[in-house]
Image 1 (cartoon, rainbow, N blue to C red):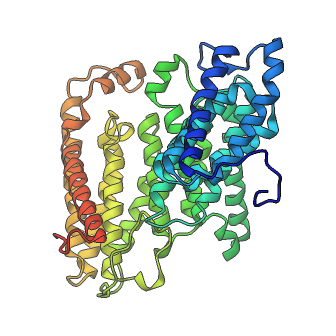
Image 2: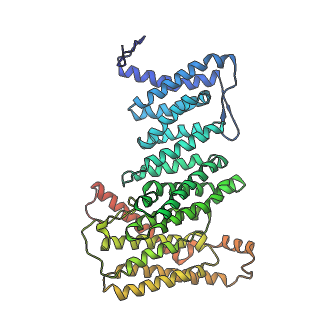
Image 3: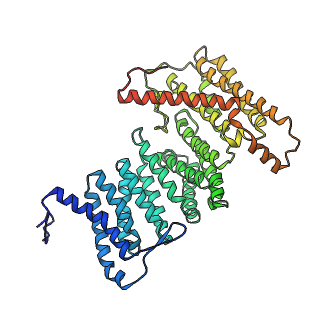
Length: 477
């Protein structure tokens, strides 16, 4: 009798023997099946179940029984190596069991559970099994995988911390790969879920209550926006279009996603909500870079800088630790009007603005000098206002912004120098595109400035990570 009071024909008391038996069954069952009942792999990488033969019909129940046992076994395994083996080898059985929806759904559930909560190596093995399931020639299977994967991602991102963020990022990056397997199938899901985000935003704008605002100002909404930005950036990138030889069906969804995202930023504009604004701005920046789409982010970043540099009173000194903008979407009340929060906000907003200015759709445009005029005017006005109001409390932050303004002006002059020899007018779009394609933006003064800033921020982050682990006790300024 076992623990469930079931009578068993035999039992294994040796754990070593049990592990060998499980390993042998997992490794060699797919080999035997491929030898006796081969399945067909199509040119596009998808697979079809084996053709119906007398041998296949005779073994089908046995194969399904074996597969169900593997699904039952997976949650009981505690060794990571055995778990990886279970996912890797069970995925090879999928072509034989895709006709059983019940078995496939149970298997997908186990894969998603591990993918959202296991060790990194095991999670990757679980994801590869999910991708194998998505590669079935039956589009209904891909629909099931896309829907289940996204819903699991949303459930897992309800709360976010600095420890959990890498795990969520891994989920977003791997899930975006699933949605890029078939753009036409992904369109229906992407359209529906972006529309869902738009409905939440519309309801918040209409009702304007705290509960309504929470429908948008939460981690699930932020991660959803970032996830769809990743999907569209991957599906609609220049490299993907060249590889496919045609424009992606998903490209038409860039505009609605941008509208929803910028609408979420405009919903609430106060000091506590600025971290969320920066999160969404970074997602839009990623989308803009990869799809070469101009997204006007400056009007949403400049108010953050100006609001902090033109405070009516001197920033309060504080012993609070610097706010981690990556793992926070709302600043705690005690951070408002403190020096540590002001420094962090100005630094993050200025760097994000610099990253946007150096992106191909902005700095790679022949109109870069004209694009930067209102930005430079606004920042210079902010600097002037900060000097008159700060009473010596914001020199460091003013210096950061002033440095950016100077580099932007130098880059505008650099672009004007290269435009001097242009013989075509703005209406000659083909000539404009050819000229922009030959432009080396990385040689511009602003590009060099951003490169130095990236290195400094990376170094700072590494020092903070080491200090958090207790490897270094002192952080360099």
